[in-house]
Image (cartoon, rainbow, N blue to C red; front, side):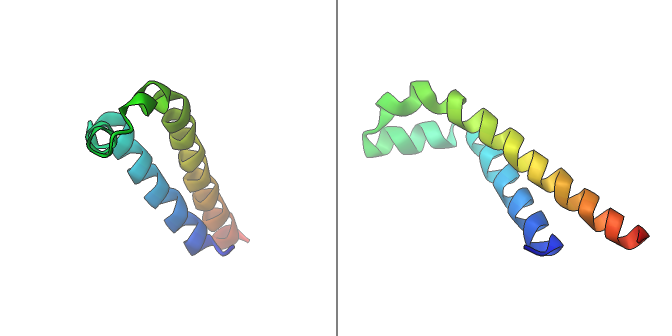
Length: 70
């Protein structure tokens, strides 16, 4: 995967995970579809996903910066 695709994946994933973590967007969507029983498990999935996508973004930025220096 090249640096641009990795960076794009990291940023998009971070934004989506942050929207679902910090806004009631996912709560409203799951309630509307009838899957509100899953709301208790959201923190166990969304917070690690947010950390993973932030890590991917930082890794892509590090690789981009390192290739410019080499």
